[in-house]
Image (cartoon, rainbow, N blue to C red):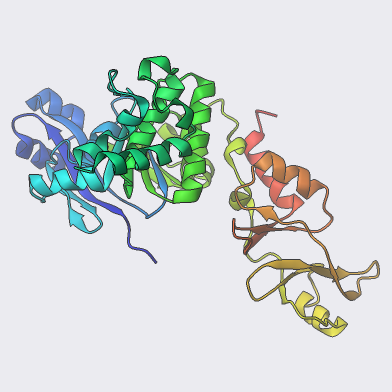
Amino acid sequence: MNSPKVVVEGLYKVFGNNSKQALDMLAGGATKEEIFSRTGQIVGVHNASFDVKEGEIFVLMGLSGSGKSTLIRLINRLVDPSAGKVLIDGRDVAAVPRSELTALRRKDMSMVFQSFALMPQRTVISNAAFGLEVAGVGKKEREARAMTVLEQVGLAPFAQKLPAQLFGGMQQRVGLARALAVNPSLMIMDEAFSALDPLKRKEMQNVLLDLQREQRRTILFVSHDLEEAMRIGTRIAIMEGGRVVQIGTPQEIITNPADEYVSRFFDGIDTSRYLTAGDLMQTDAVPIMPHASQIDASSVAATLNGSADYAFVMDTQRRIRGFVGRDANGTPVPQINHIECIERHMTLDDVVNRVVASPAPLPVVDADGSYCGSINKTNVLQVLTHHRGSHV
């Protein structure tokens, strides 16, 4: 198991001239409102603890003033913490000297903001290469690397244009390219798409998801929009009043919201749209039979174990080769039938169409084709009933 990329432990941030007094009051059970009214100190982040795994998109979500932007500024230390630790690759960012912090930000960490922050007098390629220029990379190499990332985000034909000649969504792609050019292992994106109109926003989410499938970077993404969080997040942390009130996958948060505050985010939203085959599948509902060139009725019967109607046939690479089952009389049949596999990331609507048309449960596979679970009509109906109730 990989160690986490980012570990946040007991992190606090108090804005004011006497953070110790506020921390002591918090330890004594005072609320942030009481602390502000009695001392004027503002509690920005209150005892945040979580980790971010290598290669995931971890979304920090909350309403304005919930502390999410302060929290990411503590993680890259644009703001110094009042207490607690932030470990990136095992190094405590709060304790490293400024020179090391600067090197970390230049080489290993990139930020993308809501405002595109492009330099108007520089071309697109020059903007994309700016981080590399600051890091001392020679012109030829930095422009070659910048061109590669411009191709990745679909902007290669616009390399010599100025930012003012691009639409908003394209300008944000330049901001994303600039962040990618330094090849960071950690990207921090603060409301990066929220200034865009809904169509451009979805387009940028797709660009990010496509890049993520190829590159598997660790991304901390701040958003106030639940639909965006559900669409792109591997896991979501929901913040309220400086606290992290719940962390989970989109499915976990939809299914078990921690409190009324979290539940209110879902008001009027058909949450089933954000479910995928991976959210619906069961891992041990269908027996598995090893693939062999010859399969006899007794081995099929032993696999079905008297109660199951179907078993998937799997080879040594965990690829599904088909399924075996019973005839109309319930007798096990030693014949492998073809079966369609469902990709783990397939959306619910696509899953429904396939499951309804299949007499047998369908296997769910990872992007590399390896088996990870199964889905049947009952799974789908339960989810639809639970999530769509008032939206059907």
